[in-house]
Length: 518
Image (cartoon, rainbow, N blue to C red):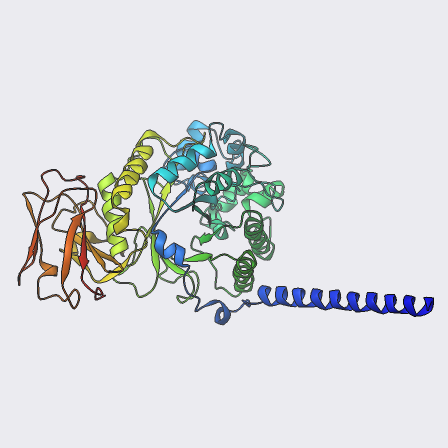
């Protein structure tokens, strides 16, 4: 009997162990399936639906901030231009700091202290702006990292500020309700970026003892004289993976570079599939923005990710898939420089409205000072945007393009410069009307405040079918006054309230009976 009981207990334990092993195998198998949902091939990566939350968000913020913020002169390309003897930045650098043999770009690191950076203040300001996702350029072309890294020693956690700048901001942003996080990477261009453009200048610089050619700094100045591209691109991938694993960003953005070249593409494919598979494990929708550089060729195949146009450069009026423009808040540089001027509130808000009406969005770049402060001009712009969006966000967030995007001339919005088409929203007025829609409501938004007491919208005449049953009513967002209107074969005519709710852009909600025709 004792033996039988012992045998029974043994058999039960074996069964229980086998069941546990079986369950573990199932869990591991499911995990493996999740990890392998995306393979490192374009065929596997393309064709995804864009992240719904990003399509709804419309407006995000990031910042250009780093070593170039210390000299605050001419542009965020200071680190390259200071090594070009024909550039005005070189002359300024020699006069201010000394020759590159005495003071190289690396020597700005201890001067970049971010001593007044307050992640909570940044997060509060960003939330007040109405942005739905935010972050910073975690590494620019100069290769200095704004996160605490174990991959490369040239990072803000290890030197300079000795703080995890991106990590602090990520944590502060995520404490804000429904705020998503973006990380932008500009460092695939770092290899050979610092070098003077011709061999003679390089030979002279090398003889002069410039630090670009010193092997002790090869892991910052990555170039063909002190390193190998294969090592560089492997570390490029490792840096991005580190940010993915450490901060779990909701959006990745990459500046232009060699993403589809033979010696880099396999690294790129491995990285992108890794990110999307990690997101599957997190149970979250993430997105990759796919930039169109000046080359006219997107970083990745056009079917991958959400298309991105720098300042709207080379973007057509109609884009057949999800897209977003990234835009500098200033007129002069993406990074902070002394004497900088900024775009107007109207210009940025009108540009946002136009982009949303065409199915796009806006990613606005700030330019903080080296100490981590955001100056009064930028704060004013952000708070003004937030005030307008608080009043009129119903016509922006979660909307989709209507069958007609715009009323008014488009020629004044587009211009050519240096062989590229561009967009400008400096000269908009109330004759420029943009349309968005949501469910059974059509929004008509004026890019300015109309003169007089009436607004005429020719697009919405009785000749344009809105629904099978017509208009149910019209209201003006931000106003409690009853809006009177009439419609004829020429236009929809709206009587304006005695006191408009703002002087930037008026958003009219036009409710229809039945389903809105889109």
